[in-house]
Image 1 (cartoon, rainbow, N blue to C red):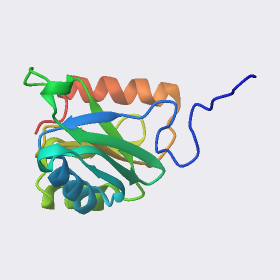
Image 2: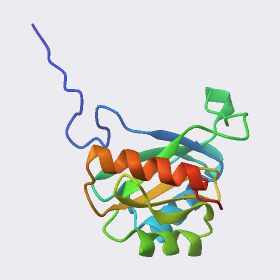
Image 3: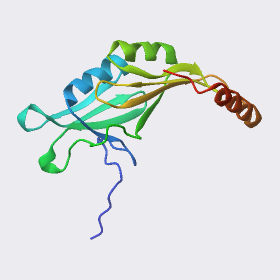
Image 4: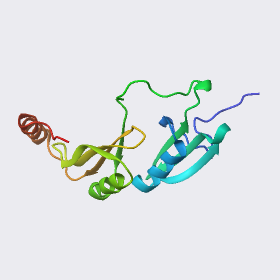
Length: 161
């Protein structure tokens, strides 16, 4: 008898690739996602000691999985102070979401600006240490325009915090 399996069984929140973040305070992180990024809470699976073993939030058409730290299961914090991970969020109104994120406790790491590639774009770091790039696509410049704008921006110095 042959069995088949699906990459994404019906009812599961996972896609072919779904970020799964370890968070110190996953329940509070869910609150931050709801208030700062208009996330929908999809799943909350409690684990031992009041921690969340698994949580799933949906922002627009994207899914994010996360959990509390469980060092006994190899699920512990990153030990460096900086991470190269950035969660990129496209929204209809970057200015409004940027303001919401700040009201939810996020700190600006790159001010919102009209960028050379055609996006209104900025970055914040949430209270849990994750960097969020928030953007609204405004225009489709030509490759030549992008090159000119990039050269101009870097000759003047990149946007400062």
